[in-house]
Image (cartoon, rainbow, N blue to C red; front, side):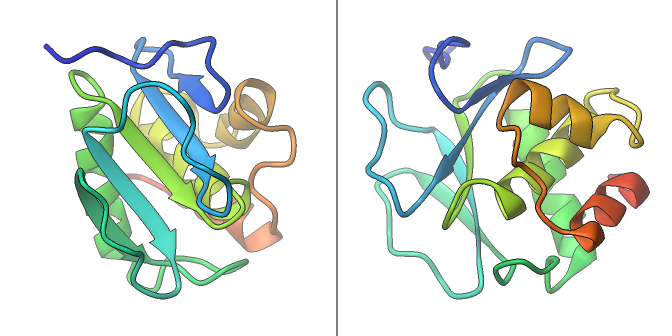
Length: 143
């Protein structure tokens, strides 16, 4: 089993199951510590190459995923892999799209969809999930 994230590190969200997922802003430098084993990048255009396995989910800033079915599949894979691997979810600023994706992971982990945004705002970033349509996406997320 790979070394996991440290739950006290900035940006690391502990889901109720104990899975740890790091959210971050791609416009900021890579945090110190171990690199991700797997990452999901939520951007309107293809991200630069990274030395770890990564998936790109087309998701323009302040919007929703371009393909909701693909988003569900990618987020489910991230949640499954977080049980044994270091998983990172990131967008440009690390709040709106990243917060929305983390809230969806929380739903997959058993947090009721109506409580997932508050969970992420409390335990990840108080400004996470920036738009009304992102909040609605989380409330309707079924994975």
